[in-house]
Length: 94
Image 1 (cartoon, one colour):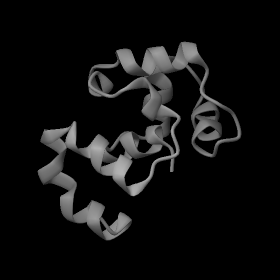
Image 2 (image 1 turned 45 degrees about the vertical axis):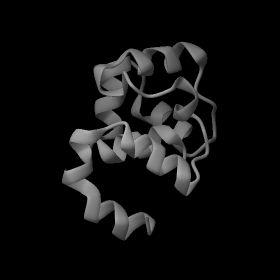
Image 3 (image 1 turned 90 degrees about the vertical axis):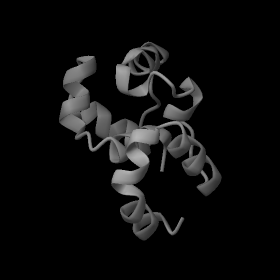
Image 4 (image 1 turned 90 degrees about the horizontal axis):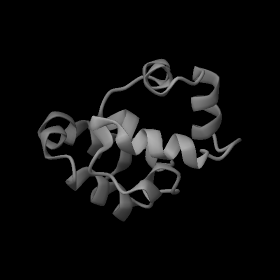
């Protein structure tokens, strides 16, 4: 899983919502998440400027995340921790 996909999951954002936020098609988002296409630097900059991703290092959007990376990103988002903690453990064996 790449960082962007994980961020969408923990923020409960759908592909089409993100696509609308940065003015791309949902197919483009799907291609990025399936790693058929890399996320262009312009779009990474747009993502990092979104309020919901402001504390996330730009490298995480495209990075193939390990379990340790998942925890690292998760710890940057304290208001999400209580909401999805059990759900995350069930899906990712954290």
